[in-house]
Length: 311
Figure 1 (cartoon, helix red, strand yellow):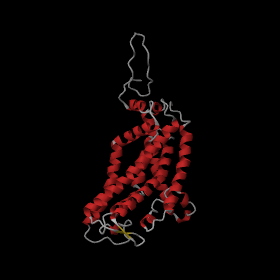
Figure 2: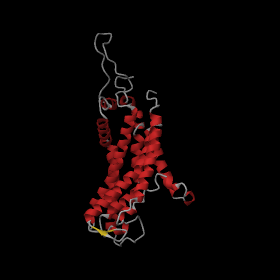
Figure 3: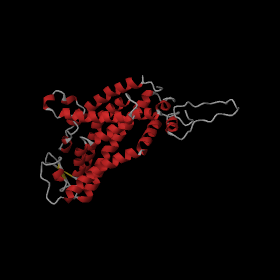
Figure 4: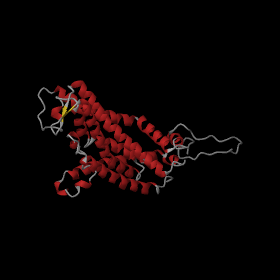
């Protein structure tokens, strides 16, 4: 192995010539992995994980793609000469011309079935498998970071991306909606009218609902990531499971299974657009996602603590 090979152990002491042997190159991903956990607290390790995640060009490319979704929707509606027919297209699409705040909500509805799960699947599938593929996983476990702490930090990083991805869609939609369409009081599904400030708050609540919806998928991706050293395979498997769950949820013959599918409540945030707010769907969704986090978190723990990182 070459001196820069991250799999080569660091040799200390004096060589046969009386000179200290040259240490491996400290400028690669292995050096980053070594420096991250040494003497670091959980907060420092998490900060380092988030720094690595949000410095990647891939992460910013995915966020840029998500931000483009509401922009494309708003421009398409703006350039359309005839009004959008109610009931056609995504929900609330016909209300965009009346109030630009609906761009964010429509964009979230469009993004939930495919785009958001796709990006979350990429990040979650890369959590452990990516480190194993680079050969840096063993370096992360040299210091007293511990496997359990590292696993928690990896999941926290994936959860942070869920927040960033959802907010990207919501904020981009609000900005382009305000730029291209009038903004004013919003009429809720219950018929009540609320001001702009409360409307923005409702949009943030919907973004929070969507974020919670993606946490179960992140736990599944984390577990799959512990099963392989091929990150692309873990990403693909996570995304395929997301699509499969939605297909199963659309089959009426499987009504008994629907409440157990992690995607079942993804679009049930309409109660947040009523007065007063009904938190039933939010609570049911949070309980379901919490169950997936516990089950697949336990599976990921069982796999990761017995994983041979030296193979």
